[in-house]
Length: 415
Image (cartoon, helix red, strand yellow):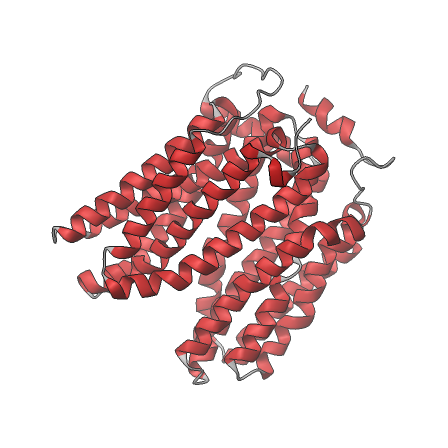
């Protein structure tokens, strides 16, 4: 019997270590383009560095899921934090010795992407072994709150730290990962039921994982809809930032806009356990789409950064509840030896939308007036919302443990 989350030593170790790590990564993330600009003056090279993080994370996504199912999960997480600490330390040394080069920065960016793609499915797959089944939804919601808090605090601090000194954000990043690595050394993950031995090579196991995920009807429908929604929303976000600049909104207010998105995520994460228990699964999922469909077109009429920030806050409130509902079911109905691959596939889908969506946003804002670009993104969101609303699979999304909960076939499909 696991203790409450507040007294669950292993969960608290994992949560706290990821909070430190996330703060450091967000602080370094905002400093990366600034570092490249001060080193070379090239905005294009800044884009290459940030693109390297996304590209390496995508490329490593599927193999990372397989490795999370093959290897000792504690060792994976400790190793990732150690590598990230070493990568940050290498930047600090290069900066202080005035020996920093763009290839060096690109290598560090690749390490960040690969470690991120490996750590996330490993942590997700480990969670049901650290907490009771009834605590999984609350633990997931608290993880979303942690991510939002770390991103909000790290992004806010990164620019200030860079102003103090070019190496300072990366010193903070290095210490954050070193502390996280030390904490994870004391983590104990209870051993799951015996896992089947790997049945083939890495490629065949990746294909097995993809095939298994695709065979789960609910997961398949949600993955396709989430891909489309994230694609249009990330395009919308870039369009709004560019439109705000064109409308003369001060940079400080644009910063508030971005911060309010994170603040909404924190508030939504705190509400998620309550809403998860009160709303039906279909309502908790569909409400995200309904709210986005209602709110995104109103951006056409907003000329204040603070009002746009309020809009972003509202947009960010409900996704944590939907994610909690979806991932709770996925983790508890997926065999332990497939959880890493499940998380890897989901991460790949989300990452692909995050990487491609801004490209669409950039094209739209270049070829269309700003208001029309907003409306194109809003129309795409409305279209996928209509699909979600009428889809019979999602309308009958069962609660875990209900008479309609089709857990057995999912387990049988693997055995």
